[in-house]
Length: 457
Image 1 (cartoon, rainbow, N blue to C red):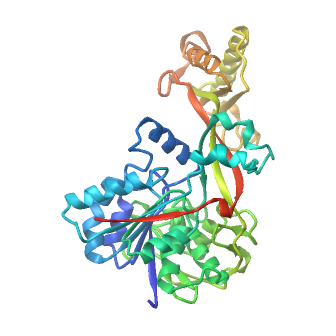
Image 2 (image 1 turned 90 degrees about the vertical axis):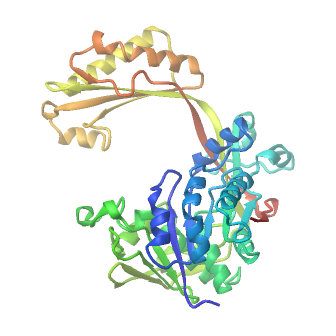
Image 3 (image 1 turned 45 degrees about the vertical axis):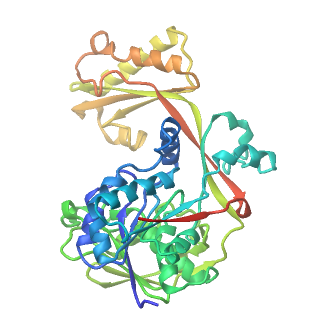
């Protein structure tokens, strides 16, 4: 058993900084590179891609990234955990394997593939078996929207990642494995933690939570004293430096920008936290009120004291379904009377939509630069006559596409037949977009069977 394991965050979401993984691999010693790609809406996007082309459905930018770092990973014996597989982990693994062969790494790389989270093919079977998959917020049964479901994925935990690593995987590619499981899995594997060692499971979960959003815990997107965060252009992504007893430090590579402080780590801890006493994952429950943080050195925060509780009997299921259509249009009005002009344009637009007999579920107007961020509070704090420019932003939502399409044709004419001084028509005429709605549900753990395959390149 190792006496320390270093897990480095390389991606915090699909679209994160592509330089980060390379810098983590080359900036200093690490044992694992963890890359988190998935959010709730991401799965539905990937499912649409797969429906058009069965070879797609994963984070495509993961492949050129791996092509860049695979030789370094093999040379330095760094292992990778990533949920870049989306709804098609096998295709993602095959693409990485093809890259490895092209780089002449055959015989030197093993890829683990974790599946079993995708419940869409089993949806009717599950509903017929009495699993109603009721919306956790509204209580409605999924049968109410079954014909519009686009994706359905159960959240898997660290166990299949541990299995893949135990079977020799150098790169583990998963579907909807939790963000925290990508860090917890390597710690469980290397330290031999039991699946029921709830305090250590909770500690590894907290470690994963702190680094799951990339640089958000090392200086990026931080509110506290943000102007003094050094060298964000060269920001270092966080690294978990863990010990077998469940204690760990958050740090980053030397000579990188950003900062690791108790305040910054605390900000990340409260991100998407919910009940601080019960941070629930498929692996166990972490009590965030038990966490002790200590500034143990420059850019090092020690985390200890984490307490845990047993894993839940149910798993969360992230379901996406088609809801309707939306469109958003913008116009920029200049001083003088910028706010008054924008409000007048909004009144004209709404009256014209009403005269056309168009019906929408919602029409939302914001004056960006005046009241869009803080609403009436900002409006009261700002004298309208002092605003040099304001962006009128109008969005509509409807179940059918036709009224939304007509709205997109009504906003542009305001440039010439509405109030004066339009200075920008951002992006041209807006286009209708399909709305993907989120449906959170629970399912008995026994109904979800993770599967681990190993591909030897």
